[in-house]
Image (cartoon, rainbow over all chains, first blue to last red; front, side, top):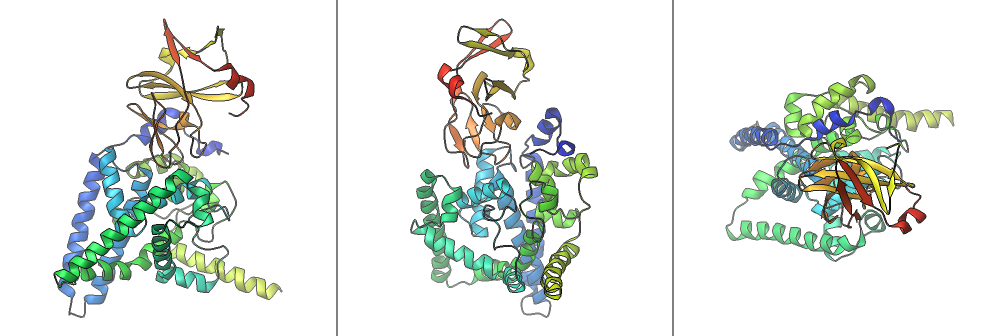
Length: 310
Length: 119
């Protein structure tokens, strides 16, 4: 049910939906330059006492970029050129660890049923969550286990009832084929590393990604954790973060998350303009630390207030 | 559209000038919703509901001869109704269109009108 104060006239929204290649290519160049610089610092810090902070800094920005760009490209809204959008979508989804069709269909179901229990395909665990579940999420264990499980089962053409609920049956064979292709590419990368006796991919990809995933998962979790369930008002089920140009360089403007859910066809570079149009009708955005604190605070109140009341 | 004239089995939809270049208009008739396009290669009519998630395509973005669904960004080729990009994978129904002077007419199967209740 559309909310009148959040509805924009056709001309305005058509203007905001317009695609471009210039803005995203400029952003991509800036993002890759920044990642290259942080990677250079990280490699230089190997064997020094700066190794750990450099690893976390490079890993976080790398993981956040891969996740965000894969998300934006799954909507097909990043580049005006379709082939460019799809090429970057495949590359980033490969690095993110989610087969492209599964990523698209599960994310579509997330947009249709945002925070509707039993229907939202990207709610990673039943809500309300326990502390142990949150800890498993923030360390990356849920994310990595799901990645391996889905990769394994989908490659054999075995799909859960949940996956079948949001994927048209005629797309399942393609999903299995793509998953097998993903496994072949991972295996080829491992085989090449073994053949050339190099740990390059471990140092430049695997280790930073594992070290940076908790930061990426904190951002991903901030979007909906502990927000209201089973409501069609996206302002109550979704959380926006306070825009920060440095973070949004790697997060691809996903800070404007409520805005993105209201108008998912608006490309990332037009989200600040969309925000300016809707701002007066949206809740005040939070910083990432404040949002994460709120999530744990809500868990605390749910757990201990209820126990005290009993 | 508040006023609809019928002419044989062709239904007057709107004036050609009512739809901007590369845009779409929603047209409701007998309990059904249709999308009327002014696409790159001409005027076309299709069902308005996306075959994937049921969103109204008339709220979507027209790019050349492609319509992108506003909810999940599935894409369809407007002249043929073919699904072009996931999550859309099923064909969209298309309807014949005719231009007379400045007026746009579309042909609707009478069976659809009889059974149609969904908008």
